[in-house]
Image 1 (cartoon, rainbow, N blue to C red):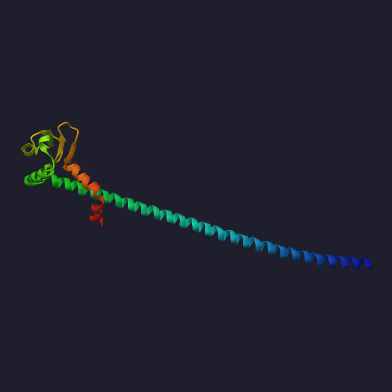
Image 2 (cartoon, rainbow, N blue to C red; image 1 turned 180 degrees about the vertical axis):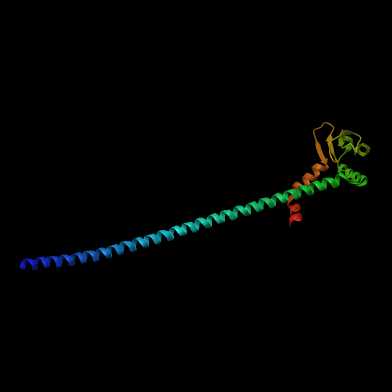
Length: 182
């Protein structure tokens, strides 16, 4: 019987030890699972933040790109409108009355000593220019206006309406844009 008591005592101690190990194991498993859940939650939170930042960055780029496209389209419209305004100016100048055209030609030639210069014009204005300038140089393919040149050809002043309109637009583009577009 003493052997049975020893066996029972060993079994009881073993059962207690197994229960204790199982309890410690359950606690360890719970701790590991808890740590794993915390790490997973941390990783999930970090990834969500990263995705959020990435989405915000994409949104900013897309908005910036869209704004740039709108600005580019707006500038193209402005450019087209300025070109139309320049074209309309040239059309109005080309259709000036004979009296207004001759007054403008006279004003353009005023600063020059015409006896020392050759003067070129379009075919339409040839008769009028020859009455003002003793050295008519010939016809040019221009809408109107004149080209004045020294007899030796060293100096040449392009006073054609196309050139004058281009210079006015180039030199006063800012003012023209402000008038047209505010």
